[in-house]
Image 1 (cartoon, helix red, strand yellow):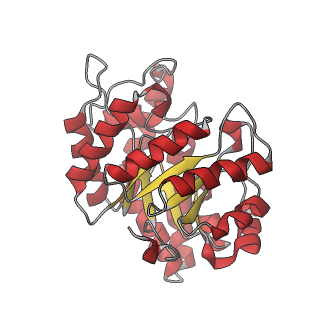
Image 2 (cartoon, rainbow, N blue to C red):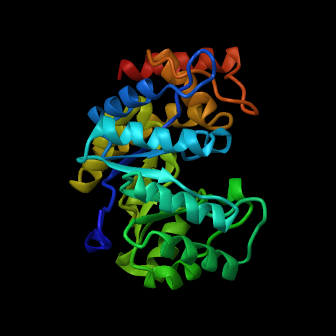
Image 3 (cartoon, rainbow, N blue to C red):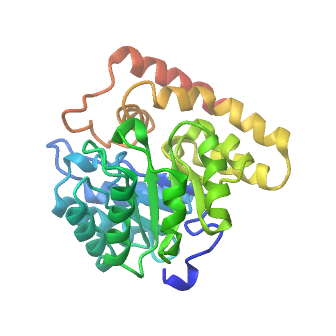
Length: 302
């Protein structure tokens, strides 16, 4: 995607799935299954896919594995699907290199999380994202704010100052409140496409100006989530609300413990042998797995 599409109202579509990374029985990345899962997600309604994000266990993937995953998914889904690479780091130099390499490997965009653990101030965050933007000026960027994981929060005023970077086109809002969407819209206007970063808040965020969602639950309920979004956009509020309420048990179950532990279990229960997470994440405990299985069964009947 070139800068000519930089201010599209939906630069990556409405429904973007943050993909898990499949591992085989020996714990190696299963590239063939990654390709099959990617095609399945597109068939179930995803406009775009994020590879090597937090849901994809990027902290425990080598740079070589990340490059191979991006290339495998890119090849599997073809040019009609937006593929974003997770390229964030708490080292600006590493984020710059990863973003540049993602562009070279054929990504349509990059998801760049705010630096974690070292807790930079707002001027440091601004300088960080400017450096990443400059490293791949033709690659559209989605900034990612998730203070519960990073320990810092990218403020709307800082995002507004970054709007002079033509390839900063979108923002994944995962602070846990619709207020973030409102404040971003007030600060940045329609120049910034805001995506919900929380499945359970997708419909409320759409109501205050978000354009879509970067979803985990779409691994399991992509068609239902897409139907909810389309109902909202068509003015069918009652139908959208119905989908929202029916999906709540799944949303809660998928975040009952650290993501992506539950969603990998859900995929296993749904016929995709994606393996367990790599340590330090552990498999879903049996009691939670049983509860998740019941929720999946109930969802199939609605």
